[in-house]
Length: 227
Ligand code: CA
Image (cartoon, rainbow, N blue to C red):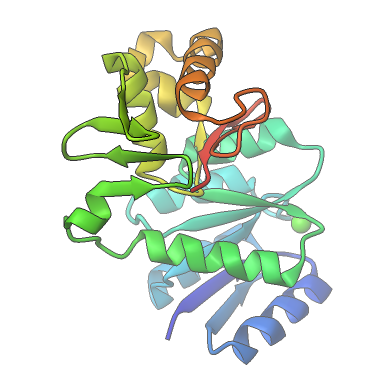
């Protein structure tokens, strides 16, 4: 059974979440504030945490930092629509993904399943080293991209960026994380680098680079690879 820790101070939302998740055989614990959440996370060892950022006793971002001191449990953040700075802060603190309120229960459950699946170890086999889309194939082992039967020439920087994204399908990777990984910590504010290199990757891989289908921009936050 997958155990979910729901951290949310809105009792109606908690009730709806608990009913829906229990109906799908999830084990659910609920915490109305940050202090209870940290205590329950340690006591119950959940498989995934669903975290509202606006809590009565502490900032949700501080809950993430406290959890990340000792656990890699996937954290899915619940966030209000307008608060994009808040989402970025949460992702940089170590959250895995966010979902914007109001959300549909189906969308939430799909994100939960994806977050849990990502923590399951994936053995290295030909299937897992090949990332295939309708338009191109990425061979992670050979470090090659193939489109319409031909090798696509990628620079080392383009490859590094692409590799991080395709190894995390469906997951929002923050600008800061990509810049730190590819260019180093001192360059973590150079978001223009990302715009340039993502445009190059789209030109090389996307059928319609102006309307990307695979290399998706989350404005102000980061990028996501949709396979
Ligand atoms: Ca709240």
